[in-house]
Length: 159
Image (cartoon, rainbow, N blue to C red; front, side, top):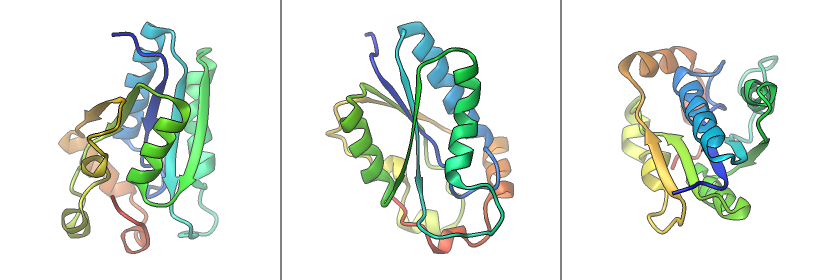
């Protein structure tokens, strides 16, 4: 199967820097985009609050996330949305007509995640695109916890 349009959905908003799992799913998206001569759409969903003044915004992180792909000559679009992540991701995949969605799977960062569920598990099974879930390694999970913005779990709409 050839993929004509790829969406990589990465959780960038809750972290002080790019996490290893975000980098890994971006790099996987790049490999598939190159193999299929397909454009790649990088997206994230933002919490509509300022968590830490003076810290890089999610939009700035998203553009930095795209820089290595653009430097290698890939066709890259970026999209920052707000709202419930699973719904925003699904809507964006449909909007751009993507046939492949790549995202990280649930890494159970804490009791709030376990209780409220993950974005990956909330993605509709009716989504026409193939969904490629990448499970974080234990090292990637720990690094993500180290990078998490402390106030974040209290303000973001999960799932």
